[in-house]
Length: 487
Image (cartoon, rainbow, N blue to C red; front, side):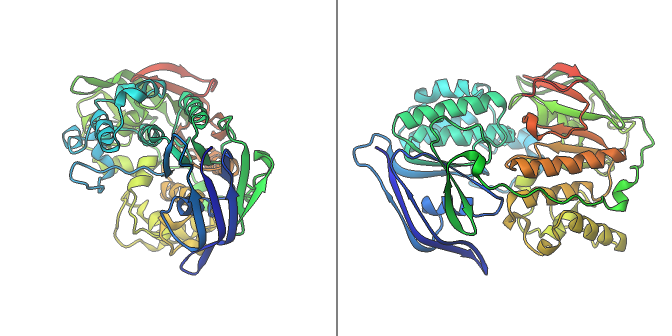
């Protein structure tokens, strides 16, 4: 028997905004829930209240089973993962992960796991098989700052599942994971349930562990139970609007190729991250970039967007010019609109929605100079297009994830760049949100955009994609015109 959760008349507000209102919920032992629903409905707030991370009015009581083997604790695994350096600092800058000499400020994965094992009185041997099964074994000697978003998610999950608490709450467990890792995670979760762990999974993904036997969503601040995943409320289909006129103009291009990389090798000491990678992207092409977590996708993108310090001296041509021939990093970034999980992580916590869009003109994550009249007009047009006007003065990170992603997309296209680089842009979005996001991408690409799109989910891809490159262990294993067998 596992824990029992009793919630009575829970009410939580943020300022004048009521999130949960007189919410009551009883979770009996051996009931394993998926908690899903609309963006911003209060799912994460409810999960944190159960875990004791936030408080409100009302009663939240978790009754542990003294005879149960799992740890008598509630563990909440957040959607976002943050790590610190050796001095406890979290203030890293976006490009820092590519600077090897600065990466030494953080622990290696193995050292982090050993430190965690010592703190929690665990034995690393107990999860060695899971480390391999989750495709994480190759990262043991990597610095934390070098990990991709998917690898960070795996580390976060490994540590939490290793503890085997009586109640395990996971917020968006599949964010950033490749197909095989999602399968292995569900197998592990089913095993933990058999050992007495109770699950609450916050997810709009229907590929869930077989142990999930209850379904619920938050509607108007209250919890509603439903009989199946299909009955859970999702965000409504958004009404299509006409693209702002400035985005219907063809981007300026006086070159034929966006990127031409030949026999690229990137290594850190003895570790080869990219091995003889060649890839040419011509103007107007729409590419899908895929590969398992840690295959080198982020490093490859960093060479194209100018963030990687090793790009000088390699055979790389960007926007018709040889890399290192006199162009600045800002000349390169002026031609690129980009979204990535890492950029979202490191984005200025003090930025309002309006500042987020404005910063796209200057390729900055923080502050910028005063915007011009025409730029203000474009900001207003895009906020209206994405239904963000009412949120313009709110801090970006206080918005529901779906609206945050739309604001980041607006930021990436604000200057009508010739190249869009969208790295896992639909992480954490439900099916409706992802469909709307990708419909906008399809429409943008009708007006001369070149696209590089990173995505694992076949159901969450724009229809305009026409070519695919697949990496595995730093090498190109597929270059093809037809998109099939999505990883």
